[in-house]
Length: 125
Image: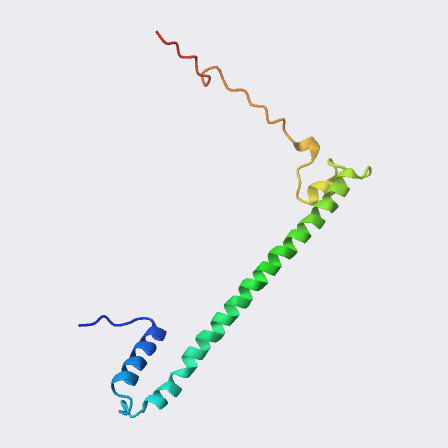
């Protein structure tokens, strides 16, 4: 027994090709091959429309990426201007409100491991 095709467009193509090749003049389920084609045109047309819309969506996502890069550069210019303005600077509340860590709140990053955490050099005998 043949495996059923789960993909509707594949099923349409397979059944249509078999019908057209082996019994083009016959009618099944009260339909001729031409009526069958007309009845199954809408699902195929909707699939084509969806594919076109997906291509448009991918194009718009690429547009968004390009625009986001330009916006990011503009944002960097504003933040750098705040940092470089004498009345505000990198330690100002405005800089903090923009989502950055103020200079006075930064830690040095220096860490000291405890005596037990240090590894002693291994000697080879």
